[in-house]
Image (cartoon, rainbow, N blue to C red; front, side, top):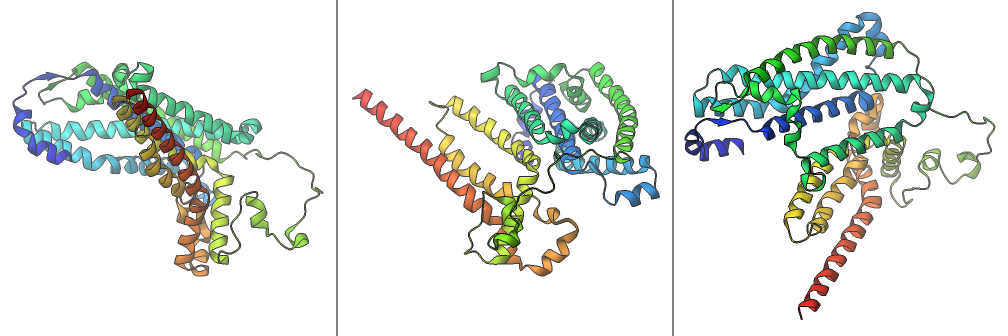
Length: 395
């Protein structure tokens, strides 16, 4: 899309002349940086608080080496997403304006943006993981606290992207130095930025890199060499619970997901995969936080479009019909192969591919589709009632 835009409007862009860099551009870059920090923090807290084969790694190489490897891996992951847009943008600027210095500065700005966002996110993530590992209260309530944090973060995102509600636009973030990477990227082009801001962005990035590496190393080392507290309350061992062998009708896996359940008419391999999927989602609901990111992004765009229409609720029913089924499927089938961990080979040779895929789909079909139909139907009925009321008033 960006290539097509540059090709179609190349002559018009070249004839614009010198323009000042608008504050909204700096604010957009700052919002992108904050989004990267949020993602990096989420990954450390939810997915990667500890390393694979931890005893072997920590007794073979130093913690500094491990931290360095994790930092390089996370940075390369971010740059993999930024690589193609940055390449196209750099080529477009060189093609349109003949700015050879942009070949260096635009990728440099992207690398500094990604590296600093990853470092700050990892520092925050390991700090949170350390608190969870040492505080019994936080360990027991980490799911609720994490949900509140995600809601607050998403609320802030909506506040900035939907100024119709909060009166705060992306240009309000232009004062943050993390948005000044764009001043570095536009040097040599007709877009006039601030050389001072560009220098501050580069100097500040160097400080963040040096300080961030030291901080992340200390936090990660302390976390890895600390025995985590238990996140479960003490219970009476001799509790009166009917075991699956005593009742003879329900398995331990079915008990674990109660009151939810999978119909017994489903074949056993498919039913077992579906039960395991439900159990994983129930035990670790924090993983669902990743679903909120695309939902909020798409939702903010839909709300913005609805605000420009006659009624903000005009797009609700079709959006719910498209977005909710995706959420129903993604809720129970997020990273299915990765969730199997070390037992993945056993799973692959024990269950056929068809049964495995059906088991992943089954929870979304059983529990998600009814919600989709209900929400979409209620909204559609409400829209029809409103239209009928308007027609009656016109008559």
